[in-house]
Image (tube, rainbow, N blue to C red; front, side, top):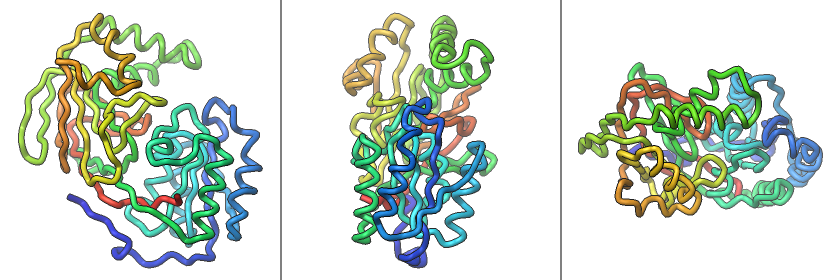
Length: 311
C-alpha cells in the first residue's frame, strides 16, 4: 500500500497565493459566466487568488506544477473531472490542499467527495476551509505502465467498453459534439466482443472474459454513473468491477442500471476490492477521470490520504 501523510512533506506557507485552474470550455461553457463570481468568493478567504493561464490540457497541467513549485498555498480546479485530473497531478502526495468547483459535464470526483453541486456554493465551502485552515485527507489511485510511466487519478479508471468507445470517438473527425460519442457507441456495439483480461489483485491472479472493467477510487464516472458503487475514497482500497460475457442486448439492458449502481447484482458482474491491481489485455487504452490515460498492461495502487481536500 502506498501511504502518504502530511508528515512526509514540508508545511505550506499559509499566506501564499491560491492558484486557480479554470477550464472555460468545461460543461460546454455553460458556467463560463460564473468565473468572476467564483474567483471573488475564493478571495473572501483573505489570500491572493492567482488564475493560471493555459491553452491546452498539457499546458494546464504544467501550469499547476509550476504554481505548486512557486509556493502556492492551495490549488483550486474549476471545471469537470478532466480539469481535476490535470490539477491533482501537481498536488498529489504533497501538503498543498486542493478544492474542486464543479463546472463540467461530469463532476464525479467533486460529488463523490462532498463538494456542493452549485459552483458558487462550492467556492464558499473552499474559501471557508482556507480561512479556517481546515482540510481532510482522501485517497487517490496511482497507475503505472509497463514502461514506468506513472500518473495519478481521482475517480475511476475505465478499461473496457467505455474506454474503447472513448478511444474511437477521439479518433473520429465527424460528427462534432456529443453526436460523435453516440456514433462511436453504435460502432463499438456492432463490434462488441468479450476480451480476455488478466487481473492480479494483491497478488492473486484472475483470468476473465469481459466487456466492462473499471477500477474505482470513487464510485462514479461519466456524469453520475455509479460503476463502482461501493468505492470509498477514504478506505485505502480500490474497487474493481468486471462485467463478463455480455452480448449487445444484455449490455444495453444493464447499462442504465449503472446510474443507480444496481448493475453489480447482475450474475455476469463481479466485484473485488484490493490495494494493488495489475491489469492486462490486448489493445486497450485506458481512460482515467474521463481523460485518455495509459495502455494496458498497467498496475494501479491505492494511495491512502494522498490528497488534502479543502472541505
